[in-house]
Length: 54
Image 1 (cartoon, rainbow, N blue to C red):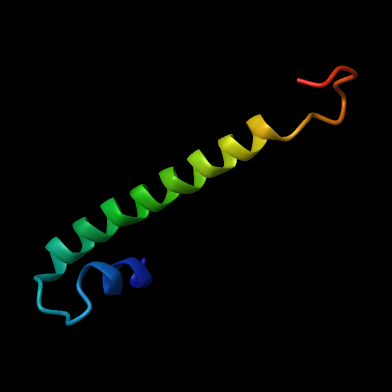
Image 2: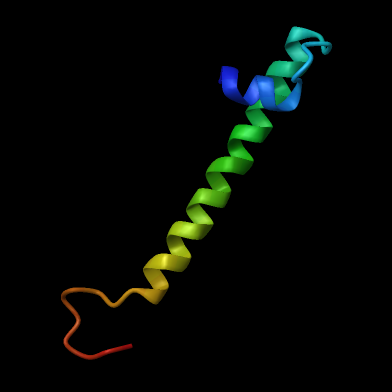
């Protein structure tokens, strides 16, 4: 969480509760981006158990 807090407030000027809230949003956005990329890769890659190509 500290990484995301530094990302949203690099100078440490925001109040701690606001910085924590923004960090939670930044982490959620990061995880959603990872999930989207993972899904895209899974759609492109053929499954090992498929006998016919997509």
